[in-house]
Length: 462
Ligand code: F6P
Image 1: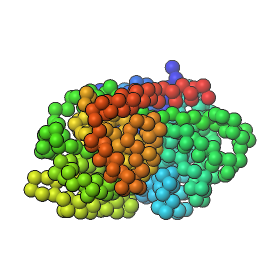
Image 2: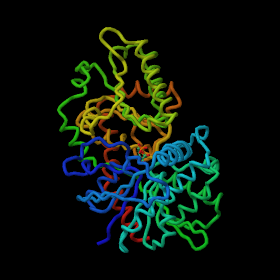
Image 3: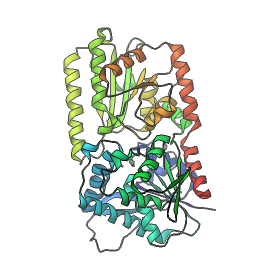
C-alpha cells in the first residue's frame, strides 16, 4: 500500500489526533482538513513541533517520532529560525504578498536565507524516513522549497504541493526579489494544487511572465521539468460539524447571557486575529448599520470571536489594538443598561462550541479582505438547522466561488456591507431556507474527504 507522507509547518498534537477529539480547537483550515485525511490514511505527518531550542546551526537535525495511528515526526527550530523563517519570511513577506497587501511586504535577505535553511532542514530530516513507495504531500507557503531540497537529496518519488492561501497576480508576485527561486522550487513538484481557478490562472500567468514555459492545460513545462496544475477546493466534514453543533448543550444566549427571544438577533463572526480577515471593516459596517437603522439598536448583538494568532508579529499586535479600539468605540457609543452591541471574545473555543454559536445565530459575517478559501464559511452553513441563519460572505474569499447563494459583500464598502447585513437580518424564512439548501449542496459536494482523496489520487497518476 502507498503510504502518504504529509509535510506542513504546523501539526496537531498527538492528543488532538486521538479518537474522540474531533471537536478539539484547531487553528486554521490546514490542520483541520489534513487531520481528517490523515486519520483515515494512517500515514506519516511531519512538521515543526512548535518548540524552540538552542541547537547550533551545525548540529545534525533531530526528529521526534510519536507512534500512534498517525505517526507524527516533529523537529524543533532555534529561536533565530522561528523569528526569521516563521515570523519573518513566512508571515511578514509571503503572507502579505500572497494576500495582495504589497505595502505590508517586508523584503529582507536574512529572512529569505533562513527560509531556505529551514526548508532544507525539513527535507534532510524527512529524507531518511521515506520509503520508496511513499507519496509526499507538502503544504503551504511556509514550505515551498522542501520539494526542491528533497530532489537534491536524490528523492525520485512523487511530490505534491498544495497552497492553502491565494496565489497573487503577476503584478504583485514580481515584487518579490526571489520570485524565480520560488517558481523554480514549485517546478520540482509533480502536482500543484490551488483552491480556485483564479489562483491557478494567476500561477500560470506568473510563470509565463517570470519563467516563460509551455502551458498545455493542466501541464506547465519548462525544459525537462513538467508539473501538473489543478484546482482542489478544500472542504469540511459537514456531518461531523452538524453533529458537533447539536452535541453542545450551551447555547450562545446562555453562554453570553443574551436575551433569548425571537426579536433579539445574533450576528456571529469568527476569525484568527489577522489583518486579512477584515475585522475592523466588519465592526465599522456593523456600526454603520446601527447608525442607519435605529430600529435595530438594542435588538442585535455582534458576537465576535477572535482567536489569538502570530501574536509576536508587529502587524498582528497593531491589528489587535485596532480591533479592540473599535470595539470600545462602538460599545461606548451605543451600550445602555440592558444592551452591549458587540461581545468581543479574544480566545479559543472548542469546535463544538463554535458550531453551536453558528447554529444559534441569525447571521454569520465572514468578511475577509482576502482569503484562500475560509472554511469557517462552510462550517457556518453545515451547522444550520430547520431555521437557518444567513451567511454574509466576502466576495474576496475562495469560498465565494462555491457559495454563490450567500449574501456576498465587498468588505471595503462599509455602506454596502451595512445595508446587506440589514437585509440579511430581515430575510424571510423561505428565502433563508432556499439559499441555505443551495449552499449546503456545495458544502456537501466538496468535503475535506473528497479534497484529500482527489489530490492523493491525482498525485498517484502524475
Ligand atoms: O491556512 C493558512 C495557514 O497559514 C496555515 O498554513 C496555518 O497553519 C494556519 O493558517 C494558522 O496560521 P499559523 O500556523 O501561523 O498560526
